Length: 455
Image (tube, rainbow, N blue to C red; front, side):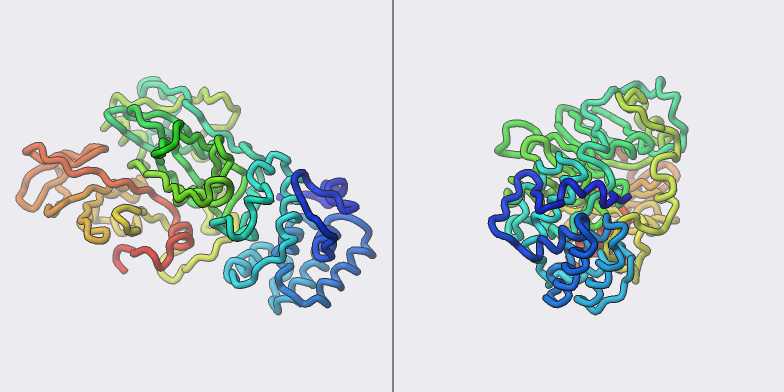
């Protein structure tokens, strides 16, 4: 997805400024960056020579921003980047972005802020809500500005579903038995949200069982996380949308009250008014499973209607078909693949002050795993064919799978529900929130700070 130089000419030419940019003095570096996307070729060539002579790699972040859109001037931009870094990645924007992620010690020149704003606001002026200059100062952000990438859509170009229409299971004739759904149950209120619909929307804002929640689904990292949206000390629940931006191939969502950008994977604000608020959204349990499995165990469930108010092809296996079938990423993210491939599925839990992942392959032939996260014993019930895992506290119990269901070491049968395991004497072992995702997202955001089952 690229924008031609012509699309930027009126925006950047002749030293024009995007709305809200305050640049008090003439900056030759900023002028050089602007020349990559507009103006005469002779001036551009002189500006590239200036950046070479200057000899500082702090301009590479700006040049890398330009490289993505400067179709006719890309070769000369790359030549400067190679001269300043000693790297040889040619016209491969993907590899240059990986290099940038691996080199956080290179602090971008201050001109990156106005230049990147000009480029991105030229795509969608609404991006100004997220990219105010005062938000983009390095000490005010929780992520690196140079690593924020446009995902190819405008603000709300992937529209959220807000309190969408739900129908009974008996009326959901459009669903196939092996269609995957996100299943959620809170206070007896059971819901199913098919991935074939959610892949087009990536976000719903709902009230389930009296609890305001949002499902943040990042198709690129294979992760759908159910967050509580009512935060202590705030009058109203947050309502979220998709910003159009990515960070290391993970979506940046935004809240509609403050227009802060949030990391979908961690549930934390990272850019904007709330970046230093210390807020972390609480997770609620959610499961991926087949429609057949969900409606069999939850006959009273309600499910998304095809009447979403949007025109999309909600057919089975349509949305992101090629991406889901590929082993490659669509956007750059550094990932350690020495143990797992970047798009292997894992089940992730971040609770009790710890973070731990279980590869879905670990459940092959072993549907019940007795384990722990930190000092908290857990039991996990998984089915990799359905991409389905549920986790529960197990206290001092040890469990195994039987033909009849779940049994403890004393031979007692337990009932598996969405909110707890229930013993024969009424003992309840609570569900623990977690979610499935691709390995690369887990590794990229947590890395050495987390543990992995079996390693």
